[in-house]
Amino acid sequence: MRIVIANPYFPPFSPGGAEHSLEQMCKRFVKEGWDVHVITNCYDGNPRVEEKDGYTVDFMDCPVRLTQGQQIDESKYLHSASYLHALTEALIGSLHNDSSGCVFIANNAQCFIPVARAGKAVGVPTIGIVRDTQAICETGACIDNQPAVSAVPCRGVAGAAFCKLRFQRQRGLNGWRPVPSVLLDGACNGWRRSRLRKQGLLPMTSVVTISDALRDLVRTIPGMDRRDIVTIRNFHTAVKLPREAETLGFLGSLGLEPNKYFLFAGRKTYGKGADLAVDAIKAVNAVRPDVKLLLLGREKVLSTLDASFVDHASVSQSLLLGVLRMSRALLIPGRWQEGLNRTMIDALYLGVPIICSEAGAPPVEGVIDGKNGYVVKCNDASALANAMSELLKWDKESFKLCRAVSEARFRERFSDEIVMEQWCNLLGLLLKAN
Image 1 (cartoon, rainbow, N blue to C red):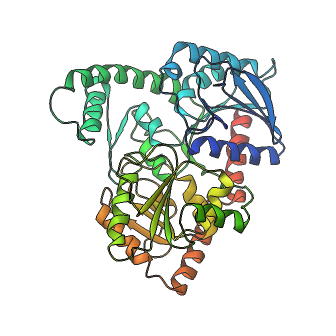
Image 2 (spheres, rainbow, N blue to C red):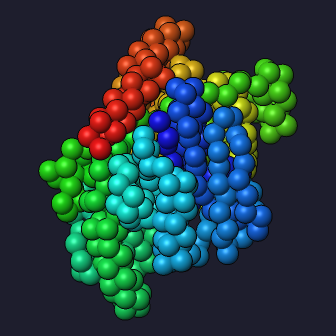
Image 3 (tube, rainbow, N blue to C red):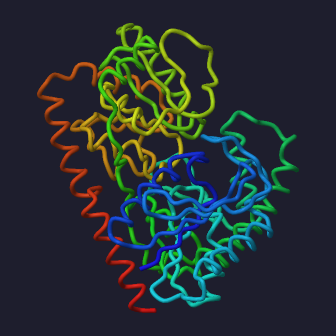
């Protein structure tokens, strides 16, 4: 079986968790004996083909230049006709005139149209993976900061403009001055959403979401309510844990002690709720000044620095697991729908408690309130602080229960055996039908 996967980024260019999840997926597919080929952009001016852990990565030529790490392309290139054409041609060329036993996978919304076009051109079955709510917003459903069941379908210019206006209002950009530009953006977004939905998502042979919460949201997209949508969750991070001395050394350099810090891992954005975590730790420190917050990820927190938290850049996957294992708990305080937090899967695997907001997948897929962590009200720093304070009171029996619950949840939903069985079933059906 030959699997060709398209994604605009791939390590060492990794704006977020999707790229690392894709890397783990490639490694697991190779173990099945499959021929895996990734097509991505080259951001350092050196287009090339690399062999990595048994699979091939084609870094195709790209006019955008980025440094390695979690830097994202803010240009319009990924929405341009040039990118769509280049990726479509690269997908078709990857077959070398032999399409037998091949499947195309779009790992990101920006790849939906090229993958759908290439698949149709050469008669290859296609899979579109919805990994986050960006893909849902991009194709026509408006996501708010409510539980996963609350998603307002958004159509056309008016819907896209309303979505954009609310987006700005949530950030405190009030008044009428931004309205003309919002309406213009709405017109552009409305056209782009319609094209992506009709030419990219709907023509896919199969649509995969990485959580049941995302699956329910995808069904709010016009035309997707009757489609058969498959949930196949991410693999956990299979890397070697660092030596304990290495993790302790890193923590010591930041003035942190094991089990006396909460961990926030990911992009420090408004949607991810990094500022809520900062406000919460300040409230916790009023009673427990010895406990701190560690934020790992790109960007900086928009808050005055003080002794209650440490703001640090991203670290290697191995070190992140070591830091997670020694934390008091993982915080996922997202304001908006969280597709499936990759670090949450690793926390379940390691038996680390999790405190998450009610938005999106974490409370559906991983966290059982009061058992292996807490689920708190969305956009509420006070509720987050209360949950953190409660967790600081846990005794040995509480942590024992947490580990047992997390182990069972991981085994049921995220183990390699479960996830690979789901991929094998889907790919087998597609190739048989083709």
